[in-house]
Image 1 (cartoon, one colour):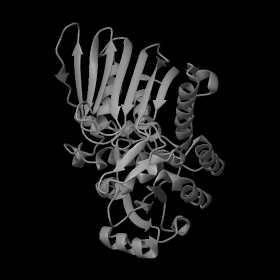
Image 2 (tube, helix red, strand yellow; image 1 turned 90 degrees about the vertical axis):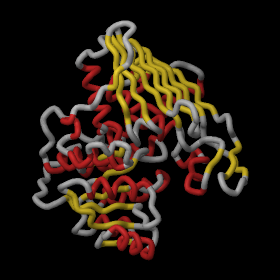
Image 3 (cartoon, one colour; image 1 turned 90 degrees about the horizontal axis):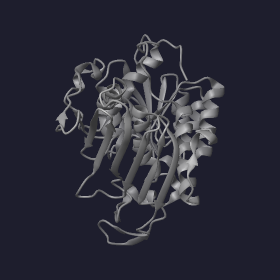
Image 4 (cartoon, one colour; image 1 turned 180 degrees about the horizontal axis):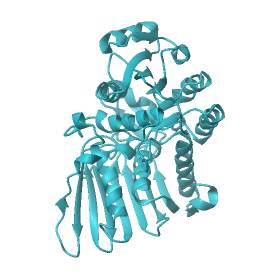
Length: 383
Protein backbone atom coordinates (compact mmCIF):
# COMPACT_ATOMS: atom_id res chain seq x y z
CA UNK A 1 0.00 0.00 0.00
CA UNK A 2 1.01 3.58 -0.48
CA UNK A 3 0.26 6.81 1.29
CA UNK A 4 -0.03 10.27 -0.20
CA UNK A 5 0.45 11.99 3.14
CA UNK A 6 3.25 14.55 3.23
CA UNK A 7 5.12 15.12 6.48
CA UNK A 8 6.81 18.52 6.76
CA UNK A 9 7.74 17.62 10.34
CA UNK A 10 9.49 14.39 11.42
CA UNK A 11 7.38 11.25 11.41
CA UNK A 12 6.39 10.70 15.03
CA UNK A 13 6.88 7.06 16.00
CA UNK A 14 5.23 5.07 18.75
CA UNK A 15 6.87 1.74 19.59
CA UNK A 16 5.13 -1.21 21.21
CA UNK A 17 7.57 -3.44 23.06
CA UNK A 18 10.49 -1.15 23.91
CA UNK A 19 11.89 -2.28 27.27
CA UNK A 20 14.40 -0.74 29.66
CA UNK A 21 15.94 -4.21 30.04
CA UNK A 22 16.91 -4.36 26.37
CA UNK A 23 15.73 -6.59 23.54
CA UNK A 24 15.34 -6.23 19.78
CA UNK A 25 13.59 -2.86 19.87
CA UNK A 26 16.36 -1.42 22.02
CA UNK A 27 19.25 -2.87 20.00
CA UNK A 28 17.83 -2.34 16.50
CA UNK A 29 14.91 0.09 16.29
CA UNK A 30 16.09 2.77 18.71
CA UNK A 31 19.56 3.18 17.11
CA UNK A 32 18.05 2.99 13.62
CA UNK A 33 15.60 5.81 14.33
CA UNK A 34 18.22 7.88 16.16
CA UNK A 35 20.58 7.59 13.20
CA UNK A 36 18.12 8.88 10.60
CA UNK A 37 16.70 12.26 9.69
CA UNK A 38 12.94 12.50 9.41
CA UNK A 39 11.89 10.49 12.47
CA UNK A 40 11.04 11.35 16.06
CA UNK A 41 10.71 8.51 18.59
CA UNK A 42 7.80 10.13 20.36
CA UNK A 43 5.96 7.42 22.29
CA UNK A 44 6.15 3.88 23.60
CA UNK A 45 3.77 1.34 25.08
CA UNK A 46 4.72 -1.48 27.45
CA UNK A 47 2.93 -4.13 29.49
CA UNK A 48 2.60 -1.87 32.56
CA UNK A 49 2.81 1.84 33.26
CA UNK A 50 5.86 1.21 35.47
CA UNK A 51 7.80 -0.58 32.73
CA UNK A 52 6.69 2.03 30.20
CA UNK A 53 7.95 4.88 32.38
CA UNK A 54 11.26 3.08 32.99
CA UNK A 55 11.79 2.65 29.25
CA UNK A 56 10.74 6.23 28.59
CA UNK A 57 13.33 7.53 31.03
CA UNK A 58 16.09 5.30 29.65
CA UNK A 59 15.52 6.17 25.99
CA UNK A 60 14.27 9.75 26.47
CA UNK A 61 10.82 9.01 25.02
CA UNK A 62 8.37 11.68 26.21
CA UNK A 63 5.03 9.83 25.90
CA UNK A 64 4.55 6.50 27.70
CA UNK A 65 1.52 4.22 27.82
CA UNK A 66 0.49 0.90 29.31
CA UNK A 67 -2.00 0.42 26.46
CA UNK A 68 -0.92 0.05 22.83
CA UNK A 69 -4.42 1.03 21.70
CA UNK A 70 -4.29 4.26 23.70
CA UNK A 71 -0.89 5.10 22.26
CA UNK A 72 -2.13 4.45 18.70
CA UNK A 73 -4.99 6.89 19.20
CA UNK A 74 -2.74 9.69 20.45
CA UNK A 75 -2.58 12.73 18.17
CA UNK A 76 1.23 12.83 18.36
CA UNK A 77 1.75 9.34 16.88
CA UNK A 78 2.03 9.06 13.08
CA UNK A 79 3.45 5.53 12.82
CA UNK A 80 3.00 2.55 15.16
CA UNK A 81 5.90 0.06 15.32
CA UNK A 82 5.15 -3.36 16.84
CA UNK A 83 8.26 -5.18 18.10
CA UNK A 84 6.79 -7.72 20.53
CA UNK A 85 6.78 -11.51 20.16
CA UNK A 86 4.57 -12.80 17.36
CA UNK A 87 1.80 -14.33 19.57
CA UNK A 88 0.83 -10.77 20.57
CA UNK A 89 0.84 -9.24 17.09
CA UNK A 90 -2.85 -9.64 16.29
CA UNK A 91 -4.11 -8.10 19.53
CA UNK A 92 -1.72 -5.14 19.30
CA UNK A 93 -1.77 -4.41 15.55
CA UNK A 94 -5.54 -4.57 15.15
CA UNK A 95 -6.31 -1.56 17.40
CA UNK A 96 -3.55 0.48 15.74
CA UNK A 97 -5.14 -0.13 12.33
CA UNK A 98 -8.59 0.58 13.72
CA UNK A 99 -7.26 3.92 14.97
CA UNK A 100 -6.24 4.74 11.39
CA UNK A 101 -2.49 4.51 11.93
CA UNK A 102 0.12 3.16 9.53
CA UNK A 103 1.87 0.17 11.12
CA UNK A 104 5.31 -1.40 10.88
CA UNK A 105 5.23 -4.93 12.31
CA UNK A 106 8.08 -7.31 12.90
CA UNK A 107 8.03 -10.54 10.91
CA UNK A 108 6.14 -12.90 11.10
CA UNK A 109 3.03 -10.79 10.80
CA UNK A 110 0.85 -13.35 12.62
CA UNK A 111 1.09 -16.79 14.16
CA UNK A 112 -0.40 -18.22 10.96
CA UNK A 113 -1.78 -17.34 7.55
CA UNK A 114 -5.28 -16.62 8.90
CA UNK A 115 -4.03 -13.90 11.27
CA UNK A 116 -1.89 -12.35 8.53
CA UNK A 117 -4.88 -12.28 6.18
CA UNK A 118 -7.07 -10.67 8.85
CA UNK A 119 -4.58 -7.86 9.48
CA UNK A 120 -3.84 -7.28 5.80
CA UNK A 121 -7.56 -7.18 5.04
CA UNK A 122 -8.23 -4.61 7.77
CA UNK A 123 -5.37 -2.41 6.55
CA UNK A 124 -6.60 -2.67 2.96
CA UNK A 125 -10.16 -1.70 3.86
CA UNK A 126 -8.88 1.37 5.69
CA UNK A 127 -6.41 2.31 2.97
CA UNK A 128 -3.45 2.35 5.36
CA UNK A 129 0.23 2.09 4.59
CA UNK A 130 1.75 -0.99 6.21
CA UNK A 131 5.24 -2.43 6.49
CA UNK A 132 6.64 -5.73 7.68
CA UNK A 133 10.13 -6.26 9.07
CA UNK A 134 11.67 -8.38 6.34
CA UNK A 135 14.70 -6.12 6.59
CA UNK A 136 17.07 -8.29 4.54
CA UNK A 137 15.37 -6.79 1.47
CA UNK A 138 16.76 -3.40 2.50
CA UNK A 139 20.33 -4.58 3.12
CA UNK A 140 22.76 -2.82 0.72
CA UNK A 141 24.79 -6.02 0.06
CA UNK A 142 21.68 -7.92 -1.01
CA UNK A 143 20.42 -5.09 -3.21
CA UNK A 144 23.84 -5.06 -4.85
CA UNK A 145 23.68 -8.86 -5.21
CA UNK A 146 20.30 -8.59 -6.93
CA UNK A 147 21.71 -6.07 -9.40
CA UNK A 148 24.76 -8.22 -10.10
CA UNK A 149 22.50 -11.15 -11.00
CA UNK A 150 20.19 -8.96 -13.11
CA UNK A 151 23.16 -7.47 -14.97
CA UNK A 152 24.41 -10.95 -15.90
CA UNK A 153 27.43 -11.33 -13.60
CA UNK A 154 26.93 -15.12 -13.50
CA UNK A 155 25.18 -15.41 -16.85
CA UNK A 156 22.05 -17.52 -16.71
CA UNK A 157 21.40 -18.74 -13.15
CA UNK A 158 21.45 -22.54 -13.06
CA UNK A 159 21.21 -23.26 -9.35
CA UNK A 160 21.39 -21.80 -5.88
CA UNK A 161 22.19 -23.39 -2.52
CA UNK A 162 21.71 -21.87 0.93
CA UNK A 163 22.82 -23.33 4.28
CA UNK A 164 21.69 -21.52 7.40
CA UNK A 165 21.32 -21.75 11.17
CA UNK A 166 18.55 -20.80 13.53
CA UNK A 167 20.38 -19.66 16.64
CA UNK A 168 17.39 -20.85 18.68
CA UNK A 169 15.62 -24.21 18.17
CA UNK A 170 18.78 -26.11 19.10
CA UNK A 171 19.52 -28.53 21.96
CA UNK A 172 19.32 -25.80 24.62
CA UNK A 173 17.04 -22.84 25.37
CA UNK A 174 16.82 -19.88 27.75
CA UNK A 175 13.93 -18.04 29.39
CA UNK A 176 13.73 -15.46 26.62
CA UNK A 177 13.23 -18.14 23.97
CA UNK A 178 11.02 -20.63 25.81
CA UNK A 179 8.06 -19.51 23.72
CA UNK A 180 9.68 -20.79 20.49
CA UNK A 181 9.33 -24.37 21.77
CA UNK A 182 5.57 -24.35 21.01
CA UNK A 183 4.38 -24.40 17.41
CA UNK A 184 1.17 -22.55 18.24
CA UNK A 185 3.18 -19.41 19.03
CA UNK A 186 4.13 -19.07 15.37
CA UNK A 187 7.84 -18.50 16.08
CA UNK A 188 9.50 -21.46 14.37
CA UNK A 189 12.66 -22.27 12.46
CA UNK A 190 10.53 -22.23 9.30
CA UNK A 191 8.74 -18.95 9.97
CA UNK A 192 11.64 -16.83 11.26
CA UNK A 193 15.16 -17.77 10.01
CA UNK A 194 13.94 -19.63 6.94
CA UNK A 195 11.16 -17.10 6.29
CA UNK A 196 13.52 -14.11 6.37
CA UNK A 197 16.03 -15.93 4.18
CA UNK A 198 13.66 -17.30 1.54
CA UNK A 199 12.19 -13.82 1.18
CA UNK A 200 15.66 -12.43 0.45
CA UNK A 201 16.37 -15.28 -1.99
CA UNK A 202 13.13 -14.48 -3.80
CA UNK A 203 14.08 -10.79 -4.00
CA UNK A 204 17.41 -11.66 -5.64
CA UNK A 205 16.47 -14.63 -7.84
CA UNK A 206 12.67 -14.72 -8.08
CA UNK A 207 9.99 -16.82 -6.43
CA UNK A 208 9.78 -20.60 -6.16
CA UNK A 209 7.59 -22.32 -8.74
CA UNK A 210 7.48 -25.70 -7.00
CA UNK A 211 8.85 -27.17 -3.78
CA UNK A 212 9.49 -30.43 -1.97
CA UNK A 213 10.31 -30.35 1.73
CA UNK A 214 11.37 -32.17 4.87
CA UNK A 215 10.53 -30.51 8.21
CA UNK A 216 11.68 -32.53 11.23
CA UNK A 217 11.82 -32.23 15.02
CA UNK A 218 14.85 -34.40 15.78
CA UNK A 219 15.37 -33.02 19.31
CA UNK A 220 11.93 -33.24 20.95
CA UNK A 221 13.46 -32.61 24.38
CA UNK A 222 15.76 -29.65 25.10
CA UNK A 223 17.73 -28.47 28.13
CA UNK A 224 17.59 -25.09 29.83
CA UNK A 225 20.96 -23.40 29.36
CA UNK A 226 21.43 -22.50 33.05
CA UNK A 227 19.12 -24.64 35.19
CA UNK A 228 19.49 -27.87 33.24
CA UNK A 229 15.73 -28.44 33.31
CA UNK A 230 14.44 -30.56 30.43
CA UNK A 231 11.45 -29.30 28.43
CA UNK A 232 9.52 -30.67 25.45
CA UNK A 233 10.04 -28.95 22.10
CA UNK A 234 7.13 -29.07 19.66
CA UNK A 235 8.74 -27.12 16.82
CA UNK A 236 11.11 -28.22 14.08
CA UNK A 237 14.90 -28.08 14.21
CA UNK A 238 15.50 -29.15 10.59
CA UNK A 239 14.04 -27.55 7.45
CA UNK A 240 15.17 -28.79 4.04
CA UNK A 241 13.49 -27.40 0.92
CA UNK A 242 14.33 -28.11 -2.69
CA UNK A 243 12.56 -26.95 -5.81
CA UNK A 244 12.53 -24.93 -8.98
CA UNK A 245 12.45 -21.16 -9.20
CA UNK A 246 10.21 -19.41 -11.72
CA UNK A 247 13.31 -18.98 -13.90
CA UNK A 248 13.79 -22.75 -14.00
CA UNK A 249 16.88 -22.68 -11.78
CA UNK A 250 17.27 -25.43 -9.18
CA UNK A 251 17.22 -24.26 -5.54
CA UNK A 252 18.10 -25.98 -2.26
CA UNK A 253 17.79 -24.51 1.24
CA UNK A 254 18.70 -26.25 4.50
CA UNK A 255 18.28 -24.61 7.92
CA UNK A 256 19.34 -26.20 11.20
CA UNK A 257 18.36 -25.27 14.74
CA UNK A 258 21.02 -23.93 17.09
CA UNK A 259 24.30 -22.30 16.11
CA UNK A 260 26.87 -24.82 14.81
CA UNK A 261 30.60 -24.33 15.20
CA UNK A 262 31.08 -25.11 11.52
CA UNK A 263 29.16 -23.25 8.79
CA UNK A 264 26.64 -20.74 10.18
CA UNK A 265 25.51 -19.28 6.86
CA UNK A 266 26.57 -19.82 3.27
CA UNK A 267 24.74 -18.98 0.03
CA UNK A 268 25.91 -19.77 -3.48
CA UNK A 269 24.48 -18.68 -6.82
CA UNK A 270 25.87 -20.65 -9.75
CA UNK A 271 25.45 -19.64 -13.39
CA UNK A 272 26.68 -20.28 -16.89
CA UNK A 273 29.39 -17.60 -16.66
CA UNK A 274 30.30 -17.39 -12.99
CA UNK A 275 29.42 -17.77 -9.35
CA UNK A 276 28.42 -15.53 -6.45
CA UNK A 277 28.75 -16.33 -2.76
CA UNK A 278 27.25 -14.65 0.32
CA UNK A 279 28.74 -15.30 3.75
CA UNK A 280 27.39 -14.09 7.08
CA UNK A 281 28.61 -14.10 10.66
CA UNK A 282 25.26 -15.39 11.90
CA UNK A 283 22.36 -14.91 9.50
CA UNK A 284 21.26 -13.28 6.27
CA UNK A 285 18.92 -10.79 7.95
CA UNK A 286 21.05 -9.60 10.86
CA UNK A 287 24.78 -8.95 11.03
CA UNK A 288 27.59 -8.38 8.57
CA UNK A 289 27.35 -9.84 5.06
CA UNK A 290 30.25 -10.37 2.69
CA UNK A 291 29.94 -10.91 -1.07
CA UNK A 292 32.35 -12.87 -3.25
CA UNK A 293 32.34 -13.59 -6.94
CA UNK A 294 34.19 -15.25 -9.78
CA UNK A 295 33.61 -15.18 -13.51
CA UNK A 296 34.67 -17.79 -16.02
CA UNK A 297 35.83 -21.33 -15.28
CA UNK A 298 38.31 -22.17 -12.57
CA UNK A 299 38.86 -18.68 -11.22
CA UNK A 300 39.19 -18.00 -7.51
CA UNK A 301 36.62 -16.05 -5.53
CA UNK A 302 37.23 -12.33 -5.06
CA UNK A 303 35.52 -10.20 -2.42
CA UNK A 304 33.09 -7.70 -3.96
CA UNK A 305 32.85 -4.47 -1.92
CA UNK A 306 29.40 -2.89 -1.98
CA UNK A 307 29.44 0.40 -3.93
CA UNK A 308 28.85 3.45 -1.76
CA UNK A 309 25.62 4.50 -3.48
CA UNK A 310 23.84 1.43 -2.08
CA UNK A 311 23.99 3.10 1.32
CA UNK A 312 21.16 5.34 0.04
CA UNK A 313 22.72 8.57 1.34
CA UNK A 314 23.16 7.14 4.83
CA UNK A 315 26.88 7.77 5.31
CA UNK A 316 26.46 7.55 9.08
CA UNK A 317 25.92 3.79 8.66
CA UNK A 318 28.98 3.13 6.50
CA UNK A 319 31.16 0.48 8.10
CA UNK A 320 28.50 -0.47 10.65
CA UNK A 321 26.96 -3.45 8.89
CA UNK A 322 27.69 -5.78 11.82
CA UNK A 323 25.28 -3.81 14.05
CA UNK A 324 21.70 -5.12 14.51
CA UNK A 325 20.34 -1.70 13.52
CA UNK A 326 22.08 -1.57 10.12
CA UNK A 327 19.47 -3.31 7.95
CA UNK A 328 16.64 -1.87 10.05
CA UNK A 329 17.93 1.66 9.47
CA UNK A 330 17.93 1.14 5.71
CA UNK A 331 14.38 -0.21 5.92
CA UNK A 332 13.28 2.86 7.90
CA UNK A 333 14.90 5.11 5.26
CA UNK A 334 12.85 3.44 2.53
CA UNK A 335 9.69 3.65 4.64
CA UNK A 336 10.26 7.34 5.34
CA UNK A 337 10.46 8.00 1.61
CA UNK A 338 7.28 5.99 1.02
CA UNK A 339 5.39 7.95 3.67
CA UNK A 340 6.59 11.32 2.40
CA UNK A 341 6.11 10.42 -1.26
CA UNK A 342 9.80 10.92 -2.04
CA UNK A 343 10.78 7.35 -2.91
CA UNK A 344 12.98 7.52 -6.04
CA UNK A 345 11.48 6.11 -9.25
CA UNK A 346 12.13 2.40 -9.88
CA UNK A 347 12.99 1.86 -6.21
CA UNK A 348 10.98 -0.76 -4.36
CA UNK A 349 9.98 0.18 -0.84
CA UNK A 350 9.49 -1.83 2.31
CA UNK A 351 7.17 -4.85 1.87
CA UNK A 352 3.70 -4.41 3.34
CA UNK A 353 1.12 -6.67 4.92
CA UNK A 354 -0.11 -8.02 1.57
CA UNK A 355 3.42 -9.17 0.82
CA UNK A 356 3.54 -10.76 4.28
CA UNK A 357 0.39 -12.72 3.44
CA UNK A 358 2.02 -14.09 0.29
CA UNK A 359 5.06 -15.16 2.29
CA UNK A 360 2.92 -16.75 5.02
CA UNK A 361 1.03 -18.63 2.31
CA UNK A 362 4.27 -19.90 0.82
CA UNK A 363 5.45 -21.21 4.20
CA UNK A 364 2.12 -22.97 4.73
CA UNK A 365 2.52 -24.64 1.33
CA UNK A 366 6.03 -25.77 2.27
CA UNK A 367 4.59 -27.35 5.43
CA UNK A 368 2.01 -29.09 3.28
CA UNK A 369 4.74 -30.45 1.00
CA UNK A 370 6.55 -31.81 4.08
CA UNK A 371 3.38 -33.36 5.56
CA UNK A 372 2.34 -35.10 2.36
CA UNK A 373 5.77 -35.95 1.01
CA UNK A 374 4.63 -34.60 -2.34
CA UNK A 375 5.87 -31.81 -4.54
CA UNK A 376 3.71 -28.68 -4.34
CA UNK A 377 3.36 -26.35 -7.32
CA UNK A 378 3.02 -22.96 -5.71
CA UNK A 379 1.59 -21.14 -8.74
CA UNK A 380 -1.43 -23.48 -8.76
CA UNK A 381 -2.19 -22.57 -5.14
CA UNK A 382 -2.06 -18.79 -5.48
CA UNK A 383 1.44 -18.25 -4.16
